[in-house]
Length: 299
Image 1 (tube, one colour):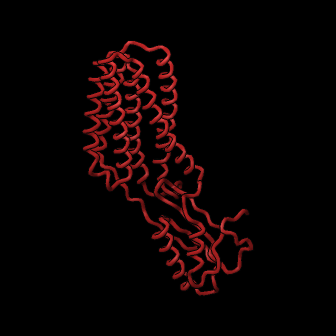
Image 2 (cartoon, rainbow, N blue to C red):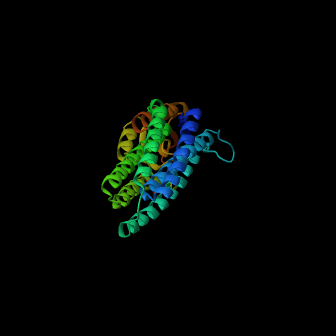
Image 3 (cartoon, rainbow, N blue to C red):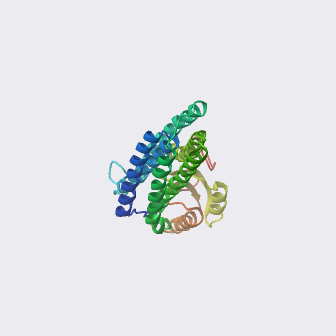
């Protein structure tokens, strides 16, 4: 049995994440109160957007810390899927809330209500400024860290939605077109719905141990092109989280010493890591052992 692996070295900046989380929590409370007082459903939907992103950032940080715990006898694969579980919970809640907001926006279209445009603009502007400041805090670190990049993109979405609420408030304040509030709510909700569904479907795929996007035909061709390799079969590939791909396979080889087989292992491992982005590799060498030589076994 041969094995090879690399580690996910992602790390979150605790102080920056804490600042951004607290700042977004304050924005959420302000927009929630402002939405209730002004009667703006768009402001309420933006507060939900901020709430979801506050939770996402906090969960991302917490899950990242859990995921970095070392493997043990109960978790031989480690705790990497803590991040996927957090993403699943957050996106599921966000998806449901977005559906309710869409229904709320439809009801407002049919029965518009009076809205305080000035208050709507004021609160949304404060949220916009806070989101821009949060983005500034994370901008530098977002280039080298996937988790921080994810949080940065969440904040970018918040900023865009806040701009929409501000513009909606201006339209209401100048022309008195109150249905624009429902339109902004609908657009924000659809945006959140699309983003949350993308995350939700990906987490479900990982939990179901679906195969990652690998060129299996290319892998077969490259590995069988290595000297002393006759065939590769019984391939299994899955993801522990969004970054770590596990790969295992049976390698039918020429009869040779174990020391010689190790050299072949090393060549296969280097190939899979450098050309296909595989993180953890387990290979089983054999000589005419399996009758089923299919790449993906049905047995």
